[in-house]
Length: 104
Image 1 (cartoon, rainbow, N blue to C red):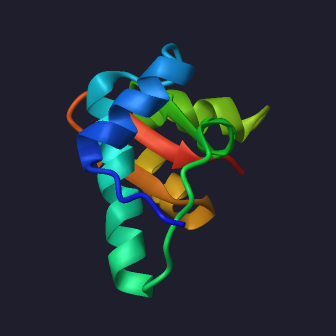
Image 2: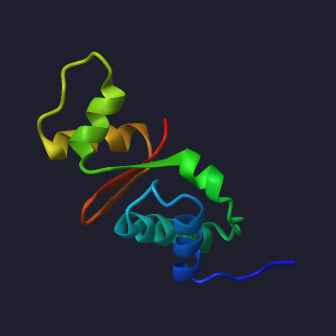
């Protein structure tokens, strides 16, 4: 049995279960990305809030994210360079207010 959820339903479900994982703007960007993935692949995604929260992480900037994952290498100081580095490593979802990356 399948229940179809709207974008708002999914955002609200994630917020209800894990309210501190993403901003509202970030959640909308993530859910819209997942919906586009479903449409482009023809695969239906089962809503597993815990898995989504484990698989994706939100950052205020690409610099913050890249430096978090970059470890002991030279830190990034340029948003464009940090985004390029991230795009080489993982899925990056840009939105007004930050970035969401698939954890790698």
